[in-house]
Length: 409
Length: 192
Image (cartoon, rainbow over all chains, first blue to last red; front, top):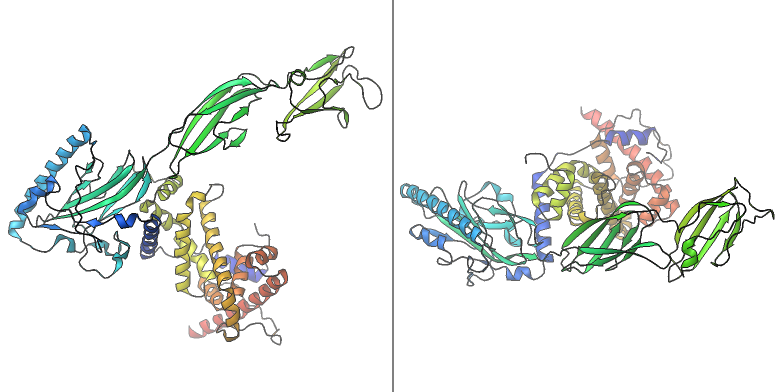
């Protein structure tokens, strides 16, 4: 491994430091995580401007009305730019499907029960402390707004999504911050789906911008804290990769697959042909010379950077070697591969005697009749390797074929 | 479901911005990378910043990791390149400050009696302490040659110095390392 010649001293230093590791530091990771989070938010352009961290007002959603007997504390994340905007969350998405609605009822009823139980407890221990001020273990963790790392003792309930912008189909992880221990949770993901987990995962299947809200009931006093964030999650459409293909022969007779790109919602394409390189054309053509199964992968991407891919297998039924003859009688030598005779492409045919080129031509009418360097003619038992380069329309991009001609009696 | 996520799953998670995956990768490589950065930094605080900057870079460019080599090697290269970049950025200020440098002796012609350490049983902290006393250019050249195994040709290209400067800096850096290590060792044994 060592290219540099190290002496005893240098080796001693290298050896002493080998495998040296320092203990893991969770606080340092928190700082990294916070910086990454800010980076993402700031790179998410003016999104932040629209992400007014907004108080959900009673009446916005049914589940809040339930709790009207309790001390409902509504909380905004710190530095909410505009608290006066209200969000109408549950009804904002029109295509709430029936299944989701069913789930919704169930979760809400469960939630109600929790609220009732909790309110029972609260009689014994009335409290007016806003729920959001309950100190949590995770005081080191970053809260959503980038500026939240001030010494804010009244930490408010906050929502931290794993991503703010994603492609449809991405699993987004939501974390409830500064929430009471063992509280009951109701998340509204804004797309007609709900969850009562503390830190749920949710897959957004459709594109759009989604409001997300979270209500948490404190098990000790029944207080409900709610946070609603407008346009928290932006889901970009995902492209769909697909293609069709047909099999033809080009003028030289080379078996060619013509691919037709039928992808939807995509504007950049990478084709990967097993053993045949790549292409970024929309609908490329590829020549297949070897018998067997070949995979074709089409990777597509849209302007949002969302990706999809499609894989298909091409079955090539026969090897193609220009239709060149393998054997010729010494009586009647006349070598010019069939495909070259028919085709119109520029080519170069070279024939070897094992070491040197003995014949070269670019004209399809100029066939090899067995003549060799010595002036003698080829005889039975001799073998002559040949190479053909076929040039593309632009004169470059040569394709290469080779074989061996055996002379027989 | 309870199986450990594979490296690829963790990478995919990081690409989606999943902080648990990021934490897992961070946990795996933090200790080693901190050790790398300690060698390049002039203080523990600087090393801490370097590690952080390095991991920010790792997580924001993870899509460029092609999986050809080990992830650890790739992360390590990011840390080393970052150290080189930092050195290059600071180069001008460093050069100007050299005269007033609080760092250990620069090469002085009359002190050519090179001492050899009696024994070579250094501890990692000896090395870190000694490296921190080198001037930035000596430290960087020494690191790249001994630990990163770069040739002088590569070092000169990376640091934007001539081949000759790389070689002479290296030999001075090595000489200083010996002096510092011997001196520190003596004072350490006197204390105990």
